[in-house]
Length: 89
Image (cartoon, rainbow, N blue to C red; front, side, top):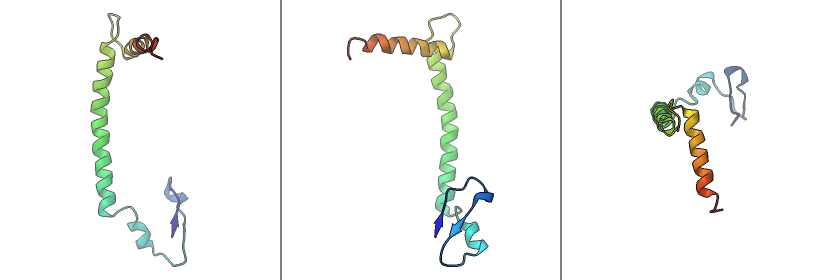
């Protein structure tokens, strides 16, 4: 059996030498390991949101200006990197 990456139900296509039942097709992607992987990815996305906000705050704190911004923190980091590596390359 061959199955392409599907972006939506209208794009689903199968090819094989045997007849597939609708029930068999509907079970694809619903095994316990598939469900476990989806739950794991959901947990990672939740952690990512918290981590991203923390990192953005730390980067903003590096801004040289009175009003700290994320963009200003990146400017500081870029300048620091250039100054640090200028004579080492």
